[in-house]
Image (cartoon, rainbow, N blue to C red; front, side):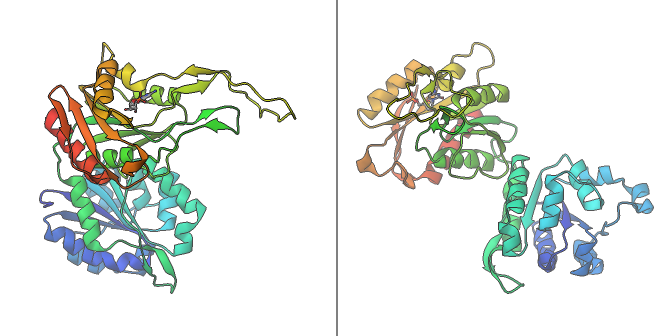
Length: 397
Ligand code: C5P
């Protein structure tokens, strides 16, 4: 339920604006109050009269409306809500948000707000796929904006593909998930994920096959329980989850520095596959291929982030969780690893090829803690993440 919650709904100028009328009804059905804001273009698609009648509140649309400023200034308007929801978020609005423009009331509110922001994009499929829009989407996600949709389907313009605004009930479910206080509300958790890339020269690097799937699922599950998640990720295949603070890094040293900068935290989960070594004196220019002469690379050890953070004497997170991917003697090796690294929990799994776990959607893990060894049944990586997040919540509250 959303009773007691206020949503500042910014309606952008797109054909999907008609769905906002239903969205307002659905939000109000669940007990939310809705303060509507319309861009000038939105008025071409829905009338302020319908919006205001359904919301039961006046529609704000003009930055320079002196009566509004007398009643409630635009800064105050941007902060009275628990959530700023932009639906439909047009390509134009997304671009303006990504570049911090503030030329009208809607964009000024988005720049001035200190509350969470969610967008429901809607646009023509080519506009959605355009690198500029995808670039803006990446920036907005990094800024912590939650994105719901768009869905794939027939579009008003006659084309087919991603670009349809999410349905009102999907948006309401996302609002619910964001605003309902979870057991991890107020807890800050750092999650590492993905591989690291260790440069040989500006164009070559040493990497590993980690996709980042399990780390991403864990960050999403922690965030869904209300945690403030700092997601420190190497160059992964999977996109980071919405609503978390993303810190992209390449190397193990950068990952260690980013983790340290993200502290203090209540917990840290180290799901990244960090390269054990880096090349000594990586070249600043591309190493030339010379017939018959092979380059010699020498290596030095990378910081062991899990071990380093676990052994901090000052400011150690209250709970430190590591992973152990093993092919033999899983329990014995993982138990030894937990002791060697001084972490609280180790999530161990058997990654021998016969298990099909590496690169697959499922995982069968064993949780090793001071309480002993606990085998979890084989389940999807999302379910492993949710169960782990629930256990972390049990431990932290
Ligand atoms: O030693 P090993 O790589 O098997 O340990 C795995 C665990 O340690 C994982 O949680 C991984 O994220 C973490 N780790 C780390 N920094 C490293 C190596 C591993 O944080 N340099």
